[in-house]
Image (cartoon, rainbow, N blue to C red; front, side, top):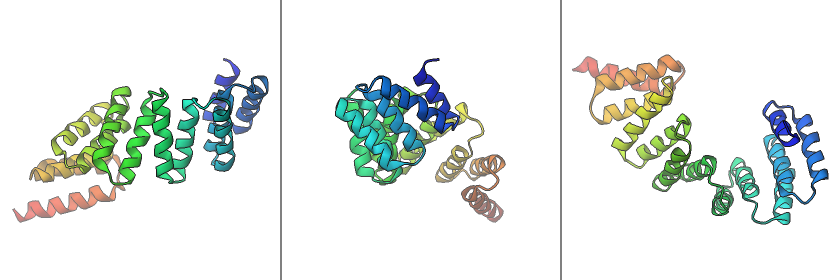
Amino acid sequence: MDKNAQAIQYMKENEYEKAAELFNELIEENPGDPIGFVNFGNLLLHMNDYHRAERFFDKALELDNTTATAYYGLGNLYYEQEVFDQAEKNYQRAIELGLEESDAYFMLGMIFQQNEQFKLAIPYFLRAVELSPEDHEVLFQYGLSLAQADYIEEAEKAFHNVLTLEQEHSDAHYNLGVISLYHEDAETALHHFKESLRIQPDHVLAANGKNSVEELLKQE
């Protein structure tokens, strides 16, 4: 395993000091390589050291202003601080420069979702799903944006696909329960709310849904 891969592994294992030592060695060995600065910036971002992380991403762009991963890092930095307009700008720039990765599209979808621009979120989540078809969380957010934009049939299909990938997904069951109520199918709604609570007993929305449906069924 080379130094860079080892440093990334240390970062995943929360061995931040060891990761920092290796990233620092890589920068000293290759001071003109922007990727070393990007990786150190990602480490600092992981440690919530936003100010220093920004300096490292900026240094990477000083060396090469077409470093897509540096813009992606800045996008994450601004997203974490809820500066969504700057985050969007940097994610878009990363994609323009060729960063064709699911995460970049996913994060853009999340920004539009945060801003309640649900229809604008859909194509970004869809592209993220196309790039990571086995990622059930990406697929779930796609389904959620469809539901929020009132594309109910498409959302229902997406949530069922989530359960194909991850049977124990409480939020997918909850949302299918809500959609079942939309279809006036109380029995199916109750099933999904119960499944949601079996998986996640403290799911407040599912508990409320279950109680409401049970009251509804008693009145019939």
